[in-house]
Length: 309
Image (cartoon, one colour):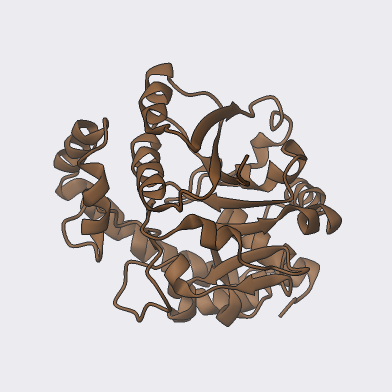
């Protein structure tokens, strides 16, 4: 049997059409030298949606849906929906304990397309590092977000990573008690954050993260791609299934047009009108103001726990 590569996603029913597109793109471009186990963490999904996604299965690619409702029952009340972040993003923090059979995994958000061979990411050497991740372009290039990373989270903004694409060394994750530390922090403190679980990961894994070329988590922006463009991640509020002018949005539609959710995706795009766009614009303005507010607060990672960077 060939080496099995475990790849994790998290979703709810709202995001499952985009999950389907992400998985289809991943399968289309993955090396056929390996077997892949795609695991979708959730807390309950419609059976018809699961069935549609599983149509992507083929020799060498297995897709499992794992309901973790019971495992997070006692902690979920502390999870926050903030801006365009859903509480499903927190699920990645429990992979190490829920799946002791794995020592290393790839974690991917749903709002992306995989254009390269995901096995190359998996086989990137991490050494003793906990994570492999790409610096968050929008943090490093935005004054307010830089201050948020430095003054509120207490880390170097130039190494602040985006958590939507992660190579996770689960052995090191367990050794460093990241899940335990996360639960301890989120239950003891009610931090005001722009990017909930991403902030925790940046703080807890600071100095133990290997930075990867941005071709593994390419932001939809006019920036130079480092190496091959392997993953395009639509990680801000403007999504290609809402707007026509999203940079590299055509990469999404190349796979979406073959999805069994294509009609749903098109319907959502057509119903995303001026009011919704105005709300998004207002949110983009508010997040900047919110960043300033957090920086001025005395209840932050940096002030309560100490500076890391």
